[in-house]
Image 1: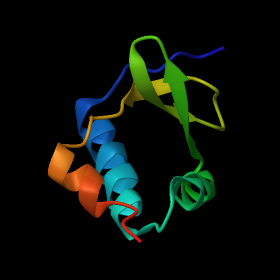
Image 2: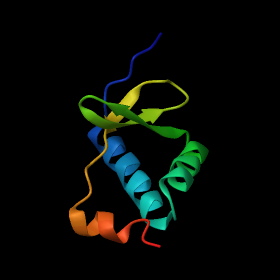
Image 3: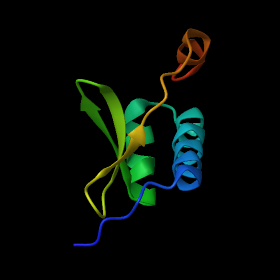
Image 4: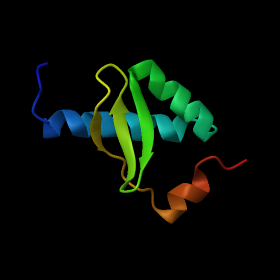
Length: 77
């Protein structure tokens, strides 16, 4: 099995995609569904939420925690 080094540029692009999809989603369930289309998932761990590759099954990076004003704006009904 080939292991790839973590590329900071690629990690930043993945985080951008994940955060952009979160702002466009109406619920957390929809957000996770949309991420599956990109081949990503969110995994809850003791260290926080991790962005995971569905294809390789490994963690890509930790999910940045949203600020409180962002949480209020997200999923507001």
